[in-house]
Length: 309
Image (cartoon, rainbow, N blue to C red):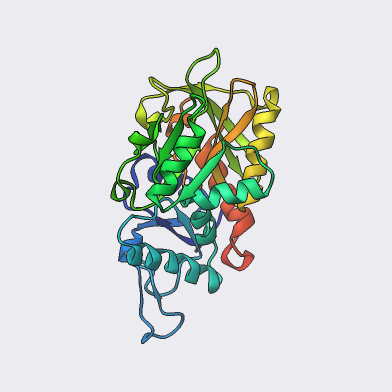
């Protein structure tokens, strides 16, 4: 598909490898893309039109927006950045993934709720503000010798993860921004520390890899190695990842799964702004191309596309 006159905002503060590949795939289809930080966007209700200011799109709003990053900040700053995504969607600019989907996945508590409500197997999880409640949860759940994992409610790439074997290891509330997200630690099987990342686009599992960690944290950013996985021979991985994306209403996502010692497959996390550099290194699929094609064909309004032969 080739297009003329279509302009897309790629929201990111660090285009890097991922931004370059998205930009190239958009350009190959005749689509102009511009990198924009959500920090630079604002509302101006004194101007004509919708009042959403997206730098680089002064004459008219973008025809679509691809979200590669929502920068952190104060609660007010993050809310404003999500407001921009919601507002664009409200005025007919398709956002991929949209603000609601990002909210559901950046917040691990809501992700866990949606997965559990859909009947999707995940490790047992508890979320509370009270340190006393967290201490009681750890005391009950580790009494038989098991462990829990404490995670930041908002976090990625394996940062801030802490194994907890007894109540004395629970930190002060301010170390985790006043919220304790606790998940049962899944003991590794005979294969050792490993999990799977499945990349899903439009509810279809596109590519997958096994990640083998140097420790119990299997994120590529923490040094895990990547091995290609044949999804046609691993239908259970694909099915569970696709179900997770449907439960969270995602355009695309990176779904992390793990097996417990009984062989049961569990969804650990769903990432609504997933990286795919490690996966691309072991996959034959052109992931950026698949993302751009899905975005243009399925999400962009037909009026925004001006096809040429």
